[in-house]
Image 1: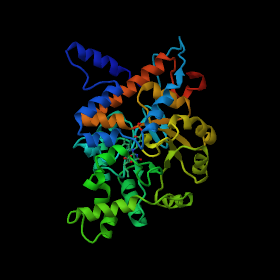
Image 2: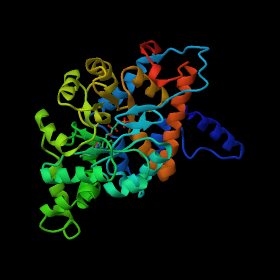
Image 3: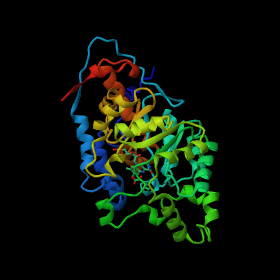
Image 4: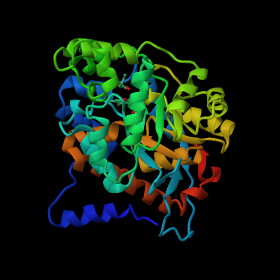
Length: 386
Ligand SMILES: Cc1cc2nc3c(=O)[nH]c(=O)nc-3n(C[C@H](O)[C@H](O)[C@H](O)COP(=O)(O)O)c2cc1C
Ligand SMILES: CCCCC(=O)C(=O)O
C-alpha cells in the first residue's frame, strides 16, 4: 500500500512555515509559467502540436467526456496503486514518456529526470533522441526501473549496437515508436525555423555509438554538421513494415512494446507479431493533426486485444482523474509527457519530482475519494459518459 496522497499534507504543513510549492500544482498554470520561463523556440517545440493542434486539444477534450461516479463507505483510506507491467514492478500505474532533447529546457536534462523517476520508483523511458547517453542516464537512474525507446536507425549494425548498449545498461523493456518515422508539419517550429536536432541537440546516443561513428569519415567532434545530417537521414524517412519487427526480436531478448497504436487492427497485428505490449498514443498530438483523440481510441483497442498484450496509454494525461479514466477504459498504466518536462524546465530534478508527486497524490486521493481501493479492481462501473 502506498500513500502518495501524503504529498498534500506535506505541502500544507510546509505552508505553516511560510513555504509555497516550487511551482503551481495546476497543470495549466504550469504550462503558462513554463512559457514565461523558456525561450520561445524551445517552449513552442515542447508545447506544440502538428498542424492546427486540433489533436492536442482533442486529447484533452476526450477526458472531459467521461465522468467518475464516486462510491461511499468503501473503506478506501488505504489504496493499492501498484501494478506489474512487463516484469517491472511499479508503485503506481505511471511511467515517464520518452521525451527527447531535454537539454533544450534544462542543462541537467535526462539525468535529472532519471534521478527523479528513480526516487519514486517510476519507470523512466529514455528516448533515442536524448541529450544524455544511454550509459549516463543508467548511472543517474541507479536502481530505478528504466526502459528504452527506439527510433529505428536505417543501418542494421547501428540499430543492433544501440540495442546492445541499452540492454547492457539495464534497460529492461524496448519501446519502439512507430508514429514518428518522419516529423510532422509543425507550424510553431517552422515559423521559428527551429529544429533542435540541427543544432546538435539529441545526438548523445548516436555520437557515443561505435557502430554509428564507424560509418563517418570524420568524427562528430571534427565535423558536427555531417554527423548530425547522417544521423537524421538514418532515423527519418523510412517507414517500416510489420514483417521487419522480427529484426528487433532477434536483437532484443526482453519485452517489446509498440508505441503509437491508434487502430484496433494495428493492435491485433502487434499481438500477431508476437509483441508484448502497445502504447495507445498519438504522440501528444504532435504527428497527425486531426487524428482521433488517443483516449477515444483506447476502449476499442483494449477490447480487441484483451489480455493477450499489455496496453499502455498516453497523450493528454494531466491529472489524477485522467489516470483513473484511462485505467478504467483499458490501460494498465499511463505515460506522462509534457508536464514533467515543464517541471524539469522550472527546477531540474526537484521540478520533475514535484510534478510526479503531485500527479500521484492527485491520483491517490481521487481513487480514495471515489471509493476505489485497488487499481486492479477498477471496472466500467466507475465511469459514466458526460
Ligand atoms: C518535447 C517532446 C519530445 C518528445 N520526444 C519523443 C521521443 O523522443 N520519442 C517518443 O517516442 N516520443 C516522444 N514524445 C512523445 C511522448 O513520448 C508522448 O507520447 C507524449 O508527450 C504524450 O502526450 P502528453 O505530452 O500530452 O502527455 C515527445 C514529446 C514531447 C512533448
Ligand atoms: C525524431 C523526433 C524526436 C522528437 C519527437 O519525438 C518529438 O518531437 O515529438
